Length: 246
Ligand code: F6R
Image (tube, rainbow, N blue to C red; front, side):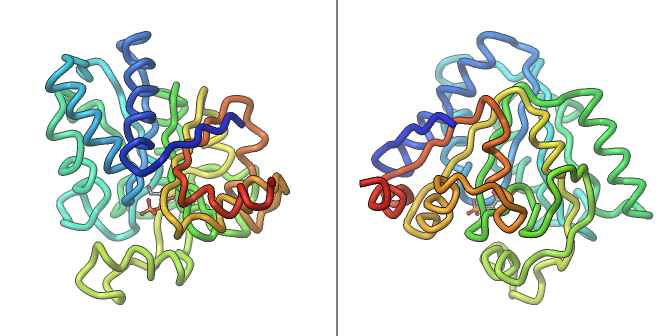
């Protein structure tokens, strides 16, 4: 795992955008794996700036998102589809036909999981996958206890994850209890992985990741099994890990 330490959230976002832009300039038909949540928002702003000011085109790029809430359709204000359209896709030249997320409403859910994994293999796997990390080490919505060989599946969200994500909803109870997520094995199929971590809130998780103990209890630790992972971490998130390394 390559570790890039930066001063703050803005620097993390810029460094990640540089990697994304390099990738796209090298291959206009890049497949990007994308995440939601707060962590990649600065990256997405930088990608939009790159398109508007530096002419980086996403016309031939395809995207595959990690996850979607169960029960929320494309038009729901809190669906990850809506989030991605608002924060990124609507401000790039990417055709909506090129953006892919699991559908939170398809029944039965197992059929949707199979469809999305097959799509992921057909269009992807991503040349470059962007990841954030939960405070409990989840990647995508692979909560502690998820098996290394897992493919796209439906998960019950941890109470801690629901509480963390409540800020996007009207109330904590409104956060869905389940989600569809790419599995650990799906994520590890990606060519390159860029993991972003920022802020004191993530310091404990970053420390645990850098302990290098691979375990289902801390899903991000499976990233040690991939040969091309770059962690971009800011000073606050790196603090505890660094103390340990001294
Ligand atoms: C989102 C996702 C999650 C988030 C994680 C961190 O698509 O897959 O794993 O990356 O919950 O969330 P934030 O960035 O809000 O701290």
